[in-house]
Each structure stands twice: as structure tokens, then as C-alpha cells.
Amino acid sequence: MSSAQVGLLLYGAWKTILLTLGGMALALIIAFPVGLARVSRNKFLRVIGFTYVELFRGAAVLVLAFWFVYALPSLGWQMDPTFAGILALGLNMGAYSGEVVRGAIQAVPPGQVEAATALNFTPSQGMRRVVLPQAVRAMIPSFGNNVIEQLKATAVVAVVSIPELTFNGQLIWSGNGRAAAVFGGLLIGYGIMALIFMTGVRLLERKVAWT
Image 1 (cartoon, rainbow, N blue to C red):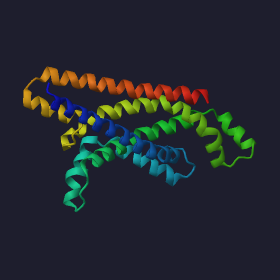
Image 2 (image 1 turned 135 degrees about the vertical axis):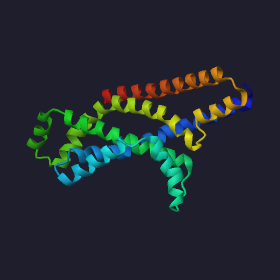
Image 3 (image 1 turned 30 degrees about the horizontal axis):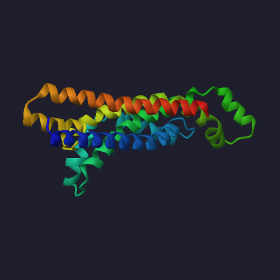
Image 4 (image 1 turned 90 degrees about the vertical axis):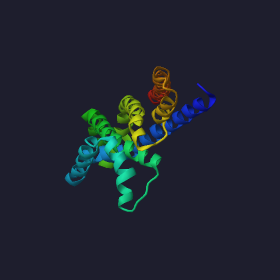
């Protein structure tokens, strides 16, 4: 494999990392409001949270990417393909992450909520000071799994010509025809990136547990 091809794969890996981190950052920004809405006492907020989760959890990342890259320009709105990929990944994963937030909040023992009430905390203060700190610890392993799922989902957006690792690997394969070498390299590349991400998640788990 030539140095130019290696450079192409490294650039693709960088794009894959960018898509993964960007999509996951957007997913987390979405997840907490959605998760809180799902457990809200306000029925209107619960309906909004439920609608978002069911809509974007059921929407395929591929279809979302096609919509942002090819359908929106026909409506007069051109979007950068990389940003479109991040948006498609983040909106989809935000629905799954919102359910993680909901589940973690509901897993906090009721006695903790009662203790917050006994201390004259308002519901919002109890959520912020008592429930969420405990729930966040429970969320981290699931968020770690979501990061890996996000990493694997980046390969899907290759179909909208985003030069991530899979897309660039296909370019090299079409040029040299060495499918075993190229796609074997991609497997190793994704495995290394997944290992790095999971190591970061485990370090974060230890840090949160220690604090």
C-alpha cells in the first residue's frame, strides 16, 4: 500500500472520529432534555419526549443522511455533508440516549427522592442535587456502548460521499482490487478506535465512581 493510500486511510479515520464525537456530543445535548421530559410530571413534556424518541429511534440513519444531503437542497437549503452526517447520527442516537437518561433517573431509589423532599428541596432542586448525580453514574456504561454503536454507524454515511474510513477504503479497493487487505485493514482500524473509546469510557467511570 502506497504512502498516499495510507494517508487517505488516516484522513478517513480522522473523519470517522469526528463523526463519532460530533454525533455523540449532539446526542448527549439532546438526551438530557428528552430524558427529563420523559419523566416529567407535565403531560405535554412527556408527549414531546415520547414523540421524539419514537420518531428518531425508528428513523434509519441512512434515510436521515439522504434527506439532509440530497432532499434539503431541493428545498433551497444546502448542507455540508460532514455536518449532515453528524446531524443524522446525533438525532438518531439522541433518541436512544434519551431512553438511557430516563431509565437511569427512574432507577434511583424512591427513598432518595423522599429524602430530598424531607430536606425541603423543590422538585427541580431534588432532581439536580440528588437524583441526577446518582443517575449519571448509572448512565456512563450505557453511553459507552452508544459511543461504539455510533462509531459503527459512521460507516453508513459513506453512501452520501463523506470521506470517512469506509468510504476511503472503498476508493482504495476500487483502485487496487485487494479486497482482503483493504477491508482487513478497516476491521483493524475500527477495532483500534473502539478500544480507544472504551478505554476513555472506563477511565471516566473510575473517575466518577471515585468522586
